[in-house]
Image (cartoon, rainbow, N blue to C red; front, side, top):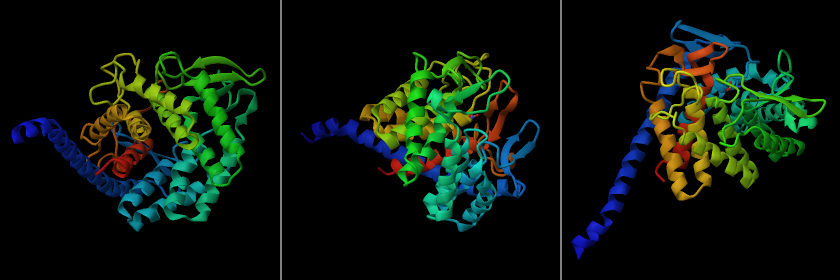
Length: 397
Ligand code: GLY
């Protein structure tokens, strides 16, 4: 009888033991990578001029470049320092973040493009969450007002970039990411119109940006006088009809985040459909680090974009919280594979390498031959965010 019972329970016991050992190895992966990030990011800080932010490191040219605070990525470096502080509670790291926040703060008035969410929420949003300093909240509130100036009622969307050249009024899928700033500010007692803008923009994106297979166009270019779409094109992808990897990642993250705030089931369904498109794509490699475009010419002999994997992993960890058990298991397994790949020597810098950046093999814009196969701040930011999310939501649970 005892033997029979043991035989019956064996699969459950084995599954439990495997889960425990995987959890333990993820816990040590998280610890190792956060400790590594703490020393590596102090090096990156030392390598960056006081008035600038790190932008990329190109290993082929052994060259690091910095940017001014108007660059769309200016929030990621302080944001990552803040995540490292959240884990380590090392006030020396907080001081470094504060130094960079002080040069970034003026951009709360910036209205030159749609990137205020990336710039001000990843930085000041995290700073306020971790310190409760009201000055940081004020910076986020002001930034929401600046971003809202780009809302165009004629197209029920926020205009991403200014027109020029072949573009008239472009709205890009990436723009979903900036809505977190708007929704948060309304939820915190700011003007409710920011929430309305975030919802309206999401609805327009859901209706117009996606193809029947649930991949998305990168750029929708509008005629503001008629409200009509002139062209559906790409900017950073391989072709107008292709699935630029990071664009798909922004869509996945953006709709998952909008579901978190609004509890609108349509956003959840959109995020689930994007996740299935990505995870079942025949061109997603076994290590789950996407090529820079799912339809890039030359696959498998072309570049990966590790930043897309970092964003997707972080988004999947959140999405997994909102779905049923079997799907949760699938999403978590994929996110875990991505994190293990990113943390491996194939994608993660060795100590002291790459000027202090963490993640290698990212692509900014291949069609523009800009930032190809380099280290980039947003890959680091979403990698660290995903590790913290894993620890907070899944480790030991
Ligand atoms: N515009 C953000 C990106 O390049 O992904």
